[in-house]
Image (tube, rainbow, N blue to C red; front, side):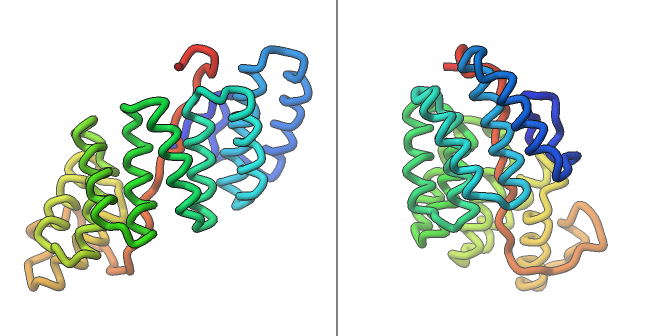
Length: 221
């Protein structure tokens, strides 16, 4: 899960969190732009968690204006667009983030999912492949590729990817669910491949998308 720069855990935030970040912005306004960018990013991440996607977009737009050559603002704005099912706009921002940081593994992974949601599965697989090539231990990329392979009815490849995702990170629920679905569909013994029991079969869900970590806008890139 995301680690916010202001030592605030998104999972622990309440409705007062945005007010707290507003106060931080007021204090930081006369300070350096880096502090403001961090505060806007944190508030944007909170807004995403709370479903306030338009507010999140506005915050990330401010980050981009402050640091147009830093990929984090574009990446986070792309995530917000994705939450609004505006995957075409999300791809434009993932493109910008990747141009600024060609090794942005999570951006490739997220763009893969956006391509898939727009019906461009081949491009989605290509981006997932790039994410895996950059970081073979990045479990969400295997999950993303597995989800796409399953939709393409390439069951053997999907099963292999779900297994690999769970080998790297046993907590990825979409991979657990996808593996169970495919095992049941191909009449295999679920016990021989599933890492744990008691799972229920559900429709494919969108894999978790990491929003990225934030340190210092002035020095990252």
